Length: 580
Image (cartoon, rainbow, N blue to C red; front, side, top):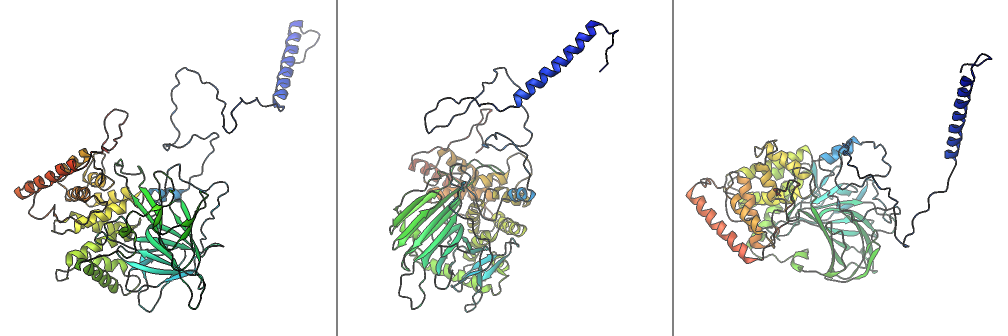
């Protein structure tokens, strides 16, 4: 600052004093603002309710800001946003469809770990935890470091292969097997229950589990990845005391603790993943499949607890069940089992067809003479030589096993391509209907499976990488909850009649599959004895025209049979109805 002297004018001197005074005033205000103050008194509220102080915004229109990154629908707006470090491996896993075969419930009302989670995470140690008791059956396991590679457990009748913890274990569709886990004096029998529609037309195919070292107070800890299991305790030889066991079962976001008071108690645990009728189609992402779980007591009495929900049932009576679904997020109270034939581990199956099915399964298992040839044997049975007895049935049952082995990996993609080849074929096989059934179950395993299957369909010439709807889209729409089997939408039934004349054989097969499910009022129709894409039955031929007349007449009868239940259709912002 310039110094003043006797020659300096009084105006200049006063200006310098003014500047100094202003600087002092600014300094005083800054010190005052830095001192702590009493916060404003909040408004009065009713006890038990929260409040938020809101500052009224100006009513002048403000140009919306362009978001800095892609926003996720439904995400809450953070109060204090902080930079987030992106985990590349996590992003790749999400893009590929997530963990193999596991579907996470995404409803906001699903219970999850809180600040004081009463459930500990599974022990990730890898060690021997059990063995397979049943011989001449196909139970496979997978090294987590080698996706797509499945190995057989118990190749020889007298040579048990150990079961290790934290590795997926699966009974292929139609196969049943006992797995004994736990300490020798505290063993639990886990009965893996595989199924095919030719046995029971039910939405369970393979049975997939992962065993964990149990925590203190438990005799077994497992994650049910999909399908059905039965739990029983096993008493050591010579022990006269009741074999009481406690098992922790993790299914989706649920955790269920099941107490078996003795070796006579038999408990069913089940997890089904399926697209809800009317689910809007999306090539990638979209609505997740609905998950349905249940615990049922088939013999004796058990105890049940859901620790994350602080819910317990001390007297879980025989022939009752507790159900849960990801749609409502609710865990119901015990209720009677509605269909015992579907719940029993050994349903009554009459007729020679069932004997043939058992024979085919046993023959296939016997061909797997080494641990690492599971895939090769299964694929060889997909197109058996003409001399094979029950050739069509062999191929049909093989379809379900191949779909079960297909995971989110390059080998899994190759297995899917083999199924699509069968689906596209013009051979007069009913096996194409089995492919539709298998892919309907497979695509509902995980939210990301639709995108994976569409890429496979496109690679096989059923679509293109364009925005316009193609045959791949039409096929995928039909296997993602297109119509309810018990409450069909009349408009959807009419659309199925039109799709029976589609140029694409897979689309016609999927349309027929949906009509059959409505006709039989079942989620999983047994293979329809109608060959939509038979050689010589071109869409414009007289034979095919007669076929269309017959099936469209059936559709008109189905529309009259039940009260119409139109499905809700989303309406975009432009006011035009979506394809759904």
